[in-house]
Image (cartoon, rainbow, N blue to C red; front, side, top):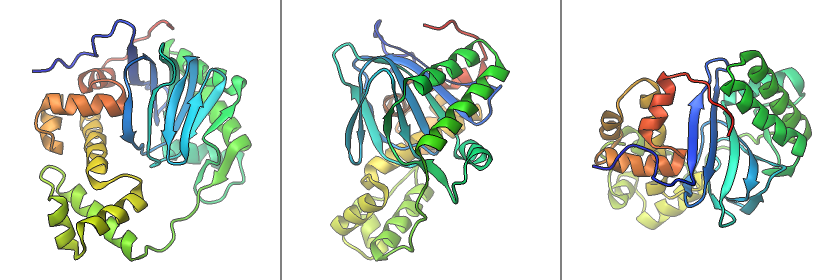
Length: 287
């Protein structure tokens, strides 16, 4: 059986965790060289700042190159992947504030109507990039007042400078309705999903028509979306204390090594390491 430890790469390290002093926030600080993130989405927002090296982030509109001094902002449910942009990889700090937390801050400091989000994906903003790193430092030192304060300053500054109201979803056209039904069926049968042909037959369409409609609606083909959804559900189970082997079976992976592989490529750490950080609070020195 595969080990649940982090990959044996002495030049790579990662910590993905939650700090109890700031509810509604996940944090990831890491150095990656050979690791790459497969295409995936997040329920909340992504705010990332590279400290060293370059990260190539593959967005629907193309690849952006995140360097030191830039801030990457990704809205919820936007498909993206990432990899090293230079041989030495990249070192970065990432904040994952929940949609609810960002909405609360937006209501306090902006006049944005509807659902607040970001109009740009990457900006040159060294001062705000430093704030992203400062949130991590404060959380790792156990300074709840500073971590919460700097986080809110960071999100407020980005919303004021680059915020926009995210477009409301239009009424579903025929293809989009079919995609939504397919997604619902996959969510309901996550542990034992139908084949593409079976799914298409059940929805009264053809496999290729379903593929096109699903990708147009969600930015991912059904099989990729399902893997992402399984990892997302596994995260919720791990948050609740479920063992990785049990979570793997519950969401439809063949076994824990199967979960390990996909989880690490989407979350950035193995499921065992992820779960341990949900149960143990420990300060760490800055790398």
